[in-house]
Each structure stands twice: as structure tokens, then as C-alpha cells.
Image (cartoon, rainbow, N blue to C red):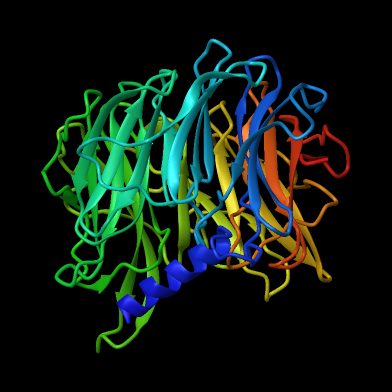
Length: 464
């Protein structure tokens, strides 16, 4: 069965990236990626599905939402696109260097490239393929994060036994590369801290582990800091096993360690069915010691798709969904919940047959903002909410409507993204389109810190 599923995924990849001659891509675009431009505007990487192929563009918008580069922006070329059923893989990621230049890490034709652009959209250096003499091949699925010094770190699942990592400086030049031992690696998450450390969390699908969760730290010089095979957070033979492709997250704790969260499936007594999906957390110090040794922190039952925002442990907000709702919670230094035991219900997906997709981001003021999909009377929309450090809802009980343009979502989509705009507000980006095989467009909206919609009732269509 496992080989069959791998084969199906490869077939879907070929369709989704337009690799089969004569057939249009059958997957919509991923939701755009944004970063502040340092002048009150935004740099945005987005995609256009024209019915024949998917193109990735990079555009700069000023405060008034006017495009500053060519009509559609800088064309990174065709053939890039999200991995099917992949809510987290990047198609492109942007990183400012503090000097008005920007590094773009993007996928194209099953390869990942890095490109450096100036404030006018001109290439500072030619695009180069991310590679290394000791690194395994890189597939379309990858993740990239900033290193907090103007550079970036790219990570990718490499075959069945390893994870590839490469750190780049602000010009996109390689600083170091490393390969992490991770047998039968499943989806992973990565994070960095202000000291240049990188943290990775992944699920091991080897037959002997049945889905154990591992974490690893790589220091600022590219050296593996914890056990060679990573620290094991779970033993899934007792009492259950971990399930789900996107059910583990990690963030630096601000002191050289990390906070990890994961969902573990709990089996019935006869071991024949899963009776709960429980969300747990563990804090690991810089030396790789578990700080909550007696018992990991239990956060919620029947939880799916957890996420973390914040840049240090005391600023961290944990989110999760239950298919119809999205919740938030905070932990203290001992692993106890701080907000109401059941968490704070931020929003609902609306109609019962509507599955919740959401995204959360740090608000830059020790709080967080969330965007999610909502359906009422068959009408699709996006809603957003902001929480302060005490869990109070700042944009009304039900949040605000982001746009009158219906978002696309489904099994092959990515959740709408939200990110801070550097001026106390937020950018929200999403893909719009009704059906899987239709042409799909990318949109962006700007929201003030008080919840005011700033860029019109619809927002801005990026390919117009």
C-alpha cells in the first residue's frame, strides 16, 4: 500500500506541475507569500494558473497597493507549484536583508532555486540552484525560513533517510550545508532563533517506530547539537500512534532551546481504532534535556493541524482546529495551560460540511492574528481575528470579513496566509477560484491593527 501511495503522489505531482505534455495543470495556485519592504509596502510572491501552466511572480506594492514593478512583477518562470495535499510546503519564500534587497527561494520543475533582487526588482545575482556536494537531491517539497540576520535556511526531505539543510547569507550565497539522519522521514517543521540555531521536528514512519516524533537542533555553524538521530518525543507503541501529515510544530524558546507540539492518536483498549487525537507539548533546553520530564503538557483532545506563533516561549500562542473550529491556548514555564482549560474558540467554519482551514501569525505585540475560511448560506469568505496577550478578541466576537472575493479551498489548496505589515496591521493573501481545473488568481488585502479593511472591499488582484 505504501508503494502504491508513493506512486499516486508522483502521478499527482506530474499533473500538478504541468509535466505531462498536452495537459493543463490540474491544481490551483498556492496562496501568496509576503514580507515587508521596509518602506510601508510589501514584497509578494504569488502564482497564476492560466489554464496551461502555473507561473510564479514577485511583485512590490506600495502603501496604496500600487504595483511598483512590471504589470505582473518579476516572472520566475513556469513549472513551479505546490505539492498536492500539502498545506505547508512552500512554492516561494522571501527574506529581506535590511538593505532593501530581497532573497527569493522558490521551486521550479522539481528543483529549488535562490535569487537575489534589489528594491526595483532587478537581479543582484543570477539565480542559482540550491545544491551541495554532500547533499541529496531536492524535490519540489521544501520549506524555507529566515535566520534573523537577513539570510535564510532551506530544508527538504531527501529520500527515505535524511533531511537536507542549507543556510544562505543575505545575498543567497551558501554558508553551510548539513544532512540530518531521519529514517523514513514524513512531513517536518523547522524554526530558527536570534542566535542562529535551527530546530527541526519530524515524524519517523519506519516500521519499527510506527510514527515516533523526533526533534533536532543545528547550531549557527551548521553542527548537529543533539543526539545524532534526534531526540525522541514519543513512543507510539504505548499508548497509540501519531497520525496526520501536518500535526507537529516547533519554535525556539529564546534561550537556545525549543517548544515542540504534536498530535498523538490514542488507540482503544483493543488497539483496533483511534478514539482521540490529543495535542501535547514539550519544552527542550539548549542542551537537549526535556524540561517537562514527568509528563508532557496536555493541551487539548480531538485536535488537528496545530500551529505556533511567537518568537520566544513567553510570547508563544498555540493554535489547533477540530475540523469545525479553531482554538488558541498558552502555556506557562511548567507546561500548565494559562487560558481557559478548553482554549479560546476564535472562529467557526460555518456550515457543518465546511472543513476548517486557517493560518496564524505573530502580531508583533505579544499577541497573534488568525485568518480562516467561512461558509454561510453557501457563500464562501475569509474571516480574521486578533488576540492580545491575555486572549481577548480585539476584532469583535466573530472577527471581520476580509474580502467579498470568494477564496478557493479544498483538498489541494493551501490555507490563506496572514502576516504582519510592520506598521501594526496585517496582510492577508489567498487564491480565488471556484473549481479545481479553472483558472485561479491571487489576491491580497491589508488590515489595520484595529481591524479596518484598507485595500477596498475586494482587496487587490495581483495578476491584473
